[in-house]
Length: 429
Image (cartoon, rainbow, N blue to C red):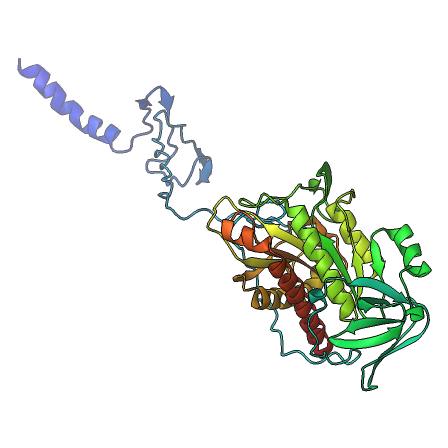
C-alpha cells in the first residue's frame, strides 16, 4: 500500500515542470474552434493580425435582439381645418350663385371701394334750369335738328349750339313753333328747324350695330331694359374666353301682387329714362324698345361697346324667396375681375352715384353696391357699367309702388341725377 504513494511523490517534480508553460489549449465552444497563438493574445477585431498571428472571431450564433420600431403617434385632430395650397386661377370665385338678377339678401363685399370726392361741374353742359322734369309733359316726343341750331332762352341767353341730327325732346307743338325742354330750360324753335326723321348717320349705326340711337353732342348712355319677350336658354361664356357657360338670358321675375312681368317694368322705366336723358343733352342708345327682340346678355354689352358708350346702365327689378326683403341695390364688377377689372373704379363710382340719387328721389331704401363677377352682361362690357336693381317685386309693397306712374317717373329722374353726378365726379378725377 505504501509503494504507490512513494511512486507519486517521486513523479511530482516532473508533473510540476510539465504544467509550468502550457503549449496549447483547444477548447470546443459551440462547435466553432477559437485558436489562440499566444497565451494571452490582444484581440482588437476579427481578422486583426497580432504579433504575426491571425485572430479569427466566430460569427455569433446568438441573435442580437433588434429594438422594436417605435410606434408613430399621429398628432391629435383639432377643429382647425387644414390649410390647402391656394389654387391659382384666372377666374376669382365668389359665394354668389350665378343668377341674374340676384335673389339673395346676402350681399358679398370685396376690398374697400375707392373714395369718391365731391363732384365738380360738367363744363360742356349748361346749368340746369328750374322748369319741371320733361316727364311731367305727357305729349312729349323726340325730334331732330335739321341743320345747325342755336338753343336760346326766352330772354335771349344762348344755351348751346347744336349740329344737324341732334335729338331733342319737344313738349309743346304748333304748326309754326316747337317748344323744347333742354336741361330744365324752355326754348322755342321754328317748326321747320326740326324733323321726326332720325339722321342717316344714326340709322346707319342702328343697321350695323343694332339698338335705337338718339345722337347728341354730349356723352352717350347705353340703356338696357333687362330681359325681353322670351328667355334664351342656350349657353354663352360668362366672359370673353371663359370656359364657364351661362344661360344667354333669363325670363326675369314678376310682381307678387301686381303680376306685372319684370321685362315690362324695366322697359317702361327705361323709356322714361331715355326721354329724361335726351332732355338733359345726352346721346342715348336704347338696347331695346320692345319685347320682340332676341338679344343675349353678352350681346347687349357688345352693343354698348360698339357704340363707345360712356356709361352702360342695365335696368332690372329684384326678387327673393323672402317676401320681407326690400330695397334698391346696384351691381358692378370687382377690382380683380379677370375680364374688365380695370374698369372697377369707374363702374363702382357709377354704381354708387346711381344708387344714392335713385334712392334719394324715389324713397326706396338704399341697400348697397354689390360687387360680383358672376354677371355676363357686366363681364363682357369694355365701358363703365352698372346694373340697377330698382326694388323687390317679391315684396308686395315695393311691387305695388313700382307699378305707379309717379314712381317710374321719379326712378328715371333719380337715375339721370346719378349719371349727372357720375360725370361730375369723372370730370373732377
